[in-house]
Image (cartoon, rainbow, N blue to C red; front, side):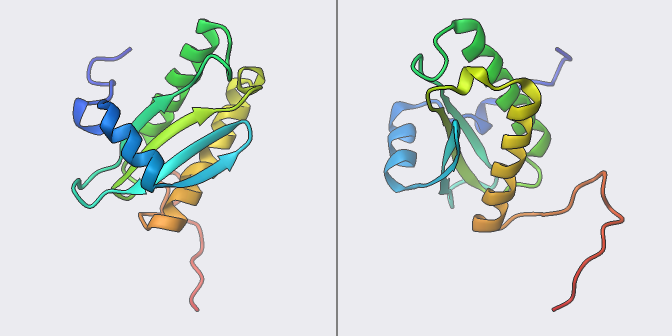
Length: 135
């Protein structure tokens, strides 16, 4: 891993009370077998990430770690587009069967849903030539 390529402490949800608050007050975005709880966060000016990948979703530790690593990496690449929200990802049984490409495609759908529901920047740095519709 490159130096500086890790998530900063301020963008991680770490306290059990913060997880409970997200699950209690947030809305769910489900793309079976991956799901996220999203709660708008007015206290912060950046999105925050929490991971709750249970053994039931991925029985082997190597699979849980792979899934969490991919979610963290994708979050790090997309956090500039996301509004200030608390996002907690959790898995459902069968999550370990997804390959990396499927997981990234599912995450892309979830990011778009978060942006759609909570605001944020829809622009992609690699797709600056996309036409915009005026309505």
